[in-house]
Image: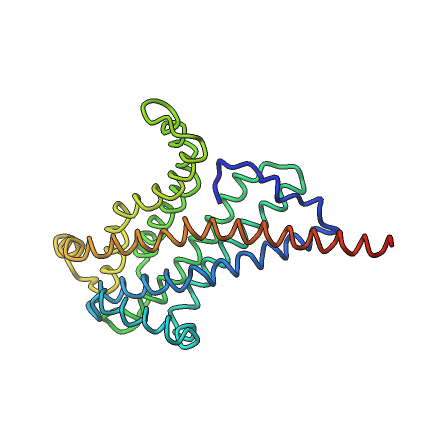
Length: 278
């Protein structure tokens, strides 16, 4: 899911008898990728927000749900916090894949349309998830989310999306030049993985304040900032760990699954044609 990568040669839409087959592969790839990364991200998200609200220490939550996932994955999948996170990654990857396919079919550069659509989907679904999590795991009775919290959630997600899609092609050339002289592949990969993680150290205060505005709306700025300082490092590290599967390993998995399914369908079509000829 990098903005700097041209459409890979292994994703040739002309291999398919219809675009619908390619779009189906895009959709399935996104859902499989989400099934791989969502359990990790959902657990971290749930534990961070529960820790910030004082319901459960983050270490205790990670241990409890990690054990549940390993010993009883079906019970884990039925936890209410899992489905919204699954929707985020399924929606983001599927839309990004399908937009790229449609751009390739129509001969258009896919970078900007893919960035805009996947960003819109990601930010919208994240805001929906955060509103649910805040109401489920907040320390007060469920109530409407403040508009400022919604705005801060959007700012937080735009920072992550921006460092995933916009920043890598801008920073990568600097890593390829003196004094590092990294290869383009290494520089691109490093930027794709490192930059979204680094920005979490900047966006974590935004995330924590947006939650505290809901939990403690009457607190002063000093009190909000005190909560941020108390929970900053645990939450920041947790969000970095959350970002690695979501925007690093998830992107690699999505591309690999998509390419392999592309090859499988292509080989199946070729085999049928050969049988028909003979």
